[in-house]
Length: 535
Image (cartoon, rainbow, N blue to C red; front, side, top):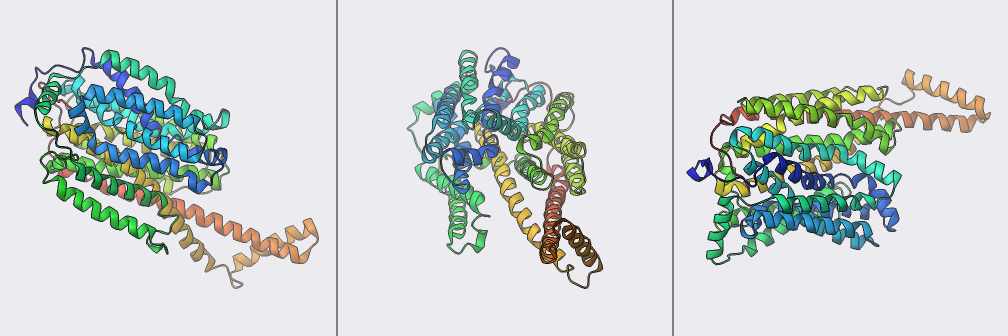
């Protein structure tokens, strides 16, 4: 690592790191929350704006696509605008666009304002993470990443519950308007507290002396790549993926592959790339990118599947499903300070990462063993184990990722990791929906193979059901039809439950295999002495 990266004399972003942490975590929590809080309100938004539910999904897709475009270029924007200026501008525009989303009178207006909100919100995560890395000394990097983890991990956990409560109690508009007072307070606090450290000020001064080389081609390729990716993930299942007769998914997949290939080729050769892929040369950073991507994939997949299971098969409403899932966030809050303390005492981050991933494996496997007779209490604890496992591996993965990254590449590294964290969530949501529907079709066909006149159990079920309905209606033909309908309902119910359990098992296997990735990493202990600067 370079001398400038290790210099212990570098000034902090401000005097009190704990005050900085308390302030900058708020806008990050607000932005991450917005990726999930609107999910449960989609039907209400579509109804309130006289649109279909399918069209209403563009409210999510537009935000994620805009977010994905801005995340990898936050390092470039921070370097040229100044991190403090960029962070304050992001908070201000995010707050204003949130107010405009809440006041939108048509779906087109809402989607447009969500694009602006996503572009502004994309700068909050990397900037706040960089500020925390600069504010705390190297031996307290675990504490810094634990504080960041409160926002990045707890927000998507409580988002659906909070969104359901706000929508049921007030209106879907307050899902967006709630950001306004929080954003204004965060803006005032950050304006009064934050200052750019010396090395960022010097870097910006040097950049001003040089002619501006804006990477227009790189930005264009990035937009093509990320928009194609997000739309494909959002609409792929609805359009039947590669079976799409109108070739929409195939076209998006082609644009994504060509765009990504061209983007990597161009950026590795450009003198001032808008997306810098060079941090991926570091073994620790590359491994942590894989871990964070897959861990958030498993988190969002579980967060998509479990409410669907509870609402479709157990009769829960959105609020009660959220209440069953919420206790996991409390245990994640308890786990994070313990992890931060262990990191501060010199525990190798690799072993904590593996331990957290194995806990996620246990949680997913536990949910794969459910049946249709489980109580709410039996649903809570596997979710607790899953989220606590992610809480255990989140801060260590962030510490290990940036430990060997030179300071001049740290801004690009933070943006790339934030992008992969968000994209892991997008892929997890899309993959969960696709796997669940495909496995339900599979189990429906397999169960139907045994429902014939030669199956004694099926004949017995139909006989008892027909006798029951005959007693109720005295209609032999109608009773027989209702008995067959009841058998079909049971088949669909069992097929759906088996599909959900299969998905949990698949994600358990994924996190188990992921637990061995830290073995490929270098020693990752935050030692006392010099500090890590981050952007």
